[in-house]
Image 1 (spheres, rainbow, N blue to C red):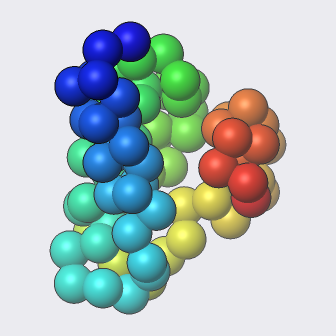
Image 2: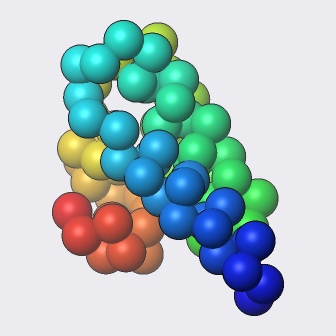
Length: 80
């Protein structure tokens, strides 16, 4: 991976971990989740949860992913 790609991944990692409740945070997390999905690092089912939560800034997508039993590798990676 190039330095530029590593920097982009690091930036997207910060965005996917945007704190709950901040204005537009749901959309921010969803956009970053799309980045990881396109790289093959997230399942379509987990991405769908981020999509659903995009307009719900205070909703934790990780809880829903865990409840649905999808994206177990993603949950491990994100440390949830």
